[in-house]
Length: 140
Image 1 (cartoon, rainbow, N blue to C red):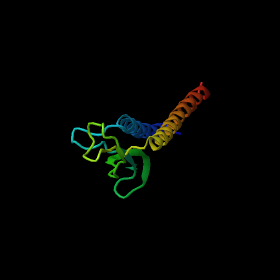
Image 2 (image 1 turned 90 degrees about the horizontal axis):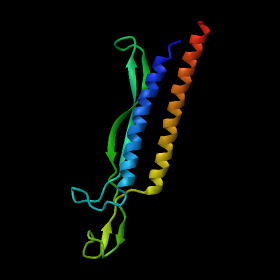
Image 3 (image 1 turned 60 degrees about the vertical axis):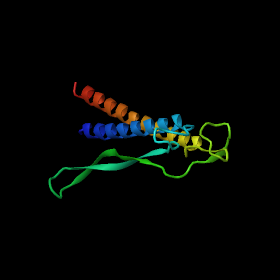
Image 4 (image 1 turned 120 degrees about the horizontal axis):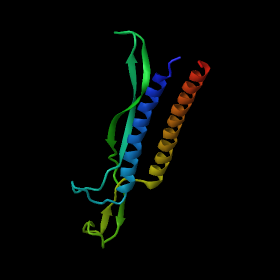
Protein backbone atom coordinates (compact mmCIF):
# COMPACT_ATOMS: atom_id res chain seq x y z
CA UNK A 1 0.00 0.00 0.00
CA UNK A 2 1.37 3.37 -1.02
CA UNK A 3 0.57 6.14 1.46
CA UNK A 4 2.43 8.89 -0.37
CA UNK A 5 -0.57 9.91 -2.56
CA UNK A 6 -2.65 10.36 0.60
CA UNK A 7 -0.01 12.66 2.01
CA UNK A 8 0.16 14.59 -1.28
CA UNK A 9 -3.63 15.11 -1.25
CA UNK A 10 -3.46 16.27 2.35
CA UNK A 11 -0.58 18.59 1.54
CA UNK A 12 -2.60 20.38 -1.12
CA UNK A 13 -5.52 20.64 1.30
CA UNK A 14 -3.23 22.16 3.94
CA UNK A 15 -1.98 24.73 1.41
CA UNK A 16 -5.55 25.64 0.42
CA UNK A 17 -6.69 25.99 4.04
CA UNK A 18 -3.63 28.11 4.85
CA UNK A 19 -4.61 30.52 2.09
CA UNK A 20 -8.16 30.58 3.41
CA UNK A 21 -6.92 31.37 6.93
CA UNK A 22 -4.74 34.19 5.59
CA UNK A 23 -7.65 35.76 3.70
CA UNK A 24 -9.92 35.51 6.75
CA UNK A 25 -7.22 37.17 8.85
CA UNK A 26 -6.96 39.94 6.26
CA UNK A 27 -10.74 40.44 6.39
CA UNK A 28 -10.73 40.67 10.19
CA UNK A 29 -7.78 43.06 10.19
CA UNK A 30 -9.57 45.39 7.76
CA UNK A 31 -13.04 45.19 9.34
CA UNK A 32 -12.90 48.90 10.18
CA UNK A 33 -10.92 50.22 7.20
CA UNK A 34 -13.19 52.89 5.76
CA UNK A 35 -10.82 54.02 3.03
CA UNK A 36 -8.15 52.02 1.24
CA UNK A 37 -5.52 53.11 -1.26
CA UNK A 38 -8.24 53.23 -3.93
CA UNK A 39 -10.39 55.58 -1.84
CA UNK A 40 -13.20 53.11 -1.11
CA UNK A 41 -13.96 50.98 1.97
CA UNK A 42 -12.32 47.58 2.20
CA UNK A 43 -14.22 44.83 0.39
CA UNK A 44 -14.42 41.37 1.94
CA UNK A 45 -12.54 38.62 0.10
CA UNK A 46 -13.34 34.92 -0.06
CA UNK A 47 -11.35 31.93 -1.27
CA UNK A 48 -12.81 29.48 -3.77
CA UNK A 49 -11.51 25.94 -4.03
CA UNK A 50 -11.53 23.47 -6.90
CA UNK A 51 -10.58 19.82 -7.12
CA UNK A 52 -7.41 18.82 -8.87
CA UNK A 53 -7.49 15.70 -10.98
CA UNK A 54 -4.46 13.71 -11.95
CA UNK A 55 -4.42 11.67 -15.14
CA UNK A 56 -3.11 8.22 -14.41
CA UNK A 57 -3.58 6.26 -17.62
CA UNK A 58 -2.81 8.89 -20.27
CA UNK A 59 -5.25 10.77 -22.48
CA UNK A 60 -8.81 10.09 -21.49
CA UNK A 61 -7.67 7.55 -18.97
CA UNK A 62 -8.40 7.17 -15.33
CA UNK A 63 -8.45 10.38 -13.30
CA UNK A 64 -7.82 10.43 -9.59
CA UNK A 65 -8.46 13.26 -7.22
CA UNK A 66 -5.25 14.77 -5.97
CA UNK A 67 -6.66 17.27 -3.52
CA UNK A 68 -8.13 20.73 -3.54
CA UNK A 69 -6.42 23.86 -4.70
CA UNK A 70 -7.24 27.53 -4.56
CA UNK A 71 -9.16 28.50 -7.69
CA UNK A 72 -9.11 32.17 -6.83
CA UNK A 73 -9.69 34.89 -4.31
CA UNK A 74 -12.97 36.66 -5.01
CA UNK A 75 -13.97 40.12 -3.80
CA UNK A 76 -17.43 40.34 -2.26
CA UNK A 77 -19.14 43.35 -3.85
CA UNK A 78 -22.09 43.65 -1.49
CA UNK A 79 -22.27 47.17 -0.07
CA UNK A 80 -21.18 47.77 3.48
CA UNK A 81 -23.28 49.28 6.20
CA UNK A 82 -23.53 53.09 6.41
CA UNK A 83 -23.35 54.49 9.93
CA UNK A 84 -23.95 57.99 11.22
CA UNK A 85 -20.71 59.48 12.56
CA UNK A 86 -20.25 63.13 11.54
CA UNK A 87 -16.94 63.34 13.45
CA UNK A 88 -15.32 60.63 11.29
CA UNK A 89 -12.78 61.99 8.77
CA UNK A 90 -14.41 59.96 5.97
CA UNK A 91 -17.98 61.06 6.68
CA UNK A 92 -19.95 62.54 3.79
CA UNK A 93 -22.02 65.75 3.91
CA UNK A 94 -24.86 63.96 5.73
CA UNK A 95 -22.45 62.57 8.35
CA UNK A 96 -22.70 58.99 7.04
CA UNK A 97 -19.64 56.76 6.85
CA UNK A 98 -19.63 53.72 4.59
CA UNK A 99 -18.11 50.78 6.45
CA UNK A 100 -16.50 47.65 4.96
CA UNK A 101 -18.80 44.71 4.20
CA UNK A 102 -16.99 42.51 6.73
CA UNK A 103 -19.20 40.82 9.34
CA UNK A 104 -16.98 39.72 12.21
CA UNK A 105 -19.39 36.95 13.26
CA UNK A 106 -19.26 35.38 9.80
CA UNK A 107 -15.49 35.73 9.70
CA UNK A 108 -15.14 33.98 13.06
CA UNK A 109 -17.33 31.10 11.87
CA UNK A 110 -15.22 30.81 8.71
CA UNK A 111 -12.07 30.98 10.82
CA UNK A 112 -13.19 28.14 13.07
CA UNK A 113 -14.26 26.05 10.07
CA UNK A 114 -10.94 26.55 8.31
CA UNK A 115 -9.03 25.84 11.50
CA UNK A 116 -10.90 22.58 12.08
CA UNK A 117 -10.33 21.53 8.49
CA UNK A 118 -6.63 22.27 8.86
CA UNK A 119 -6.50 20.18 12.05
CA UNK A 120 -8.30 17.29 10.34
CA UNK A 121 -5.76 17.29 7.52
CA UNK A 122 -2.91 17.31 10.01
CA UNK A 123 -4.51 14.30 11.67
CA UNK A 124 -4.45 12.47 8.33
CA UNK A 125 -0.72 13.13 7.99
CA UNK A 126 -0.08 11.88 11.54
CA UNK A 127 -2.11 8.73 10.90
CA UNK A 128 -0.30 8.05 7.61
CA UNK A 129 3.05 8.45 9.36
CA UNK A 130 1.99 6.04 12.12
CA UNK A 131 0.85 3.53 9.51
CA UNK A 132 4.22 3.74 7.78
CA UNK A 133 6.05 3.25 11.07
CA UNK A 134 3.91 0.20 11.89
CA UNK A 135 4.55 -1.25 8.46
CA UNK A 136 8.29 -0.85 9.00
CA UNK A 137 8.01 -2.57 12.40
CA UNK A 138 6.23 -5.53 10.82
CA UNK A 139 9.10 -5.93 8.36
CA UNK A 140 11.71 -6.25 11.13
